[in-house]
Length: 229
Picture 1 (cartoon, rainbow, N blue to C red):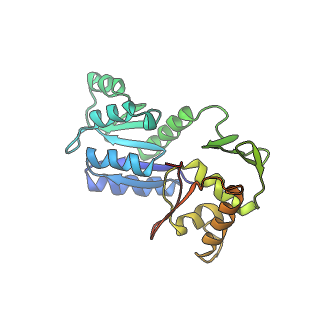
Picture 2: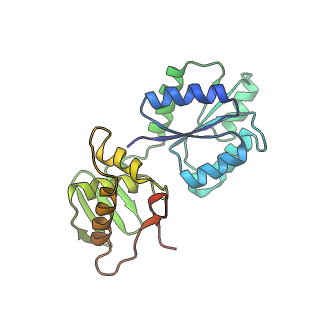
Picture 3: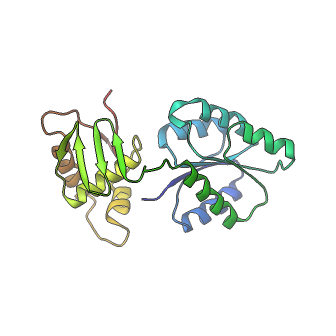
C-alpha cells in the first residue's frame, strides 16, 4: 500500500520534480494546479498528505488550508505548505491557518520527504494500524480476524488483503490494475479479471445474511469501499 500525496502547485517543472522524487520513494501522486481543483481532489481522492503551494490561482493555499481544517472529513489531513514566502510573519500565518509544516523554496527533496513522513507519523493515531473499522466491519490486523456487526467473517488470504487495503482508503476508487499492484504486488503476474473474482468472494462473505453491500462498483473505473447511503 502506497500513501497518496496530493501536490497542489501551478509550476509545472516543480510538479514534475516532486512527482519523480515522491514516486521514487514509494508514494502515489495526484496533482492540482489551483485551489479549487485541490479541494475537489481532496474530497474525491482522499489523499494521505497534501503538499500545498501558497500562491495559487482561484483559491489561495492559505484559504485551501483553512477549508481543509473546517471540513470534518479532512480536519486531520496532514498539510505541508511549500512557498517562496520565507518571512517569519508568513511562516506564522501559514502555520496558524492549519498547516502542519512549512517549507520555503528552494528546498532539498530529501528533506521534504523526511518532513512529509514525519507529519504523516504524527497524524497516525495510536493503534490505528492494529484494528481498522469501517461502518459495521472491523479488521484486526494482528489476529487476522474480520467481524461484521459483531459476527465473525471468514476470508481467504487474498480477500483479507483486499479488504484491508480498501478499508485503509475508504471512499477512494481503485482500478483493477491499481488493486493488482497494491494487493498482489508489482512482480506477480495475474490476469486483471482475477480482481473481479476476489471482489465477488469478498462481497459474498461480507454480505451474508443480507447485509448492506459496502463494496461499490464504479463502471469503467474500478471498486471502492463506501458507506451505505
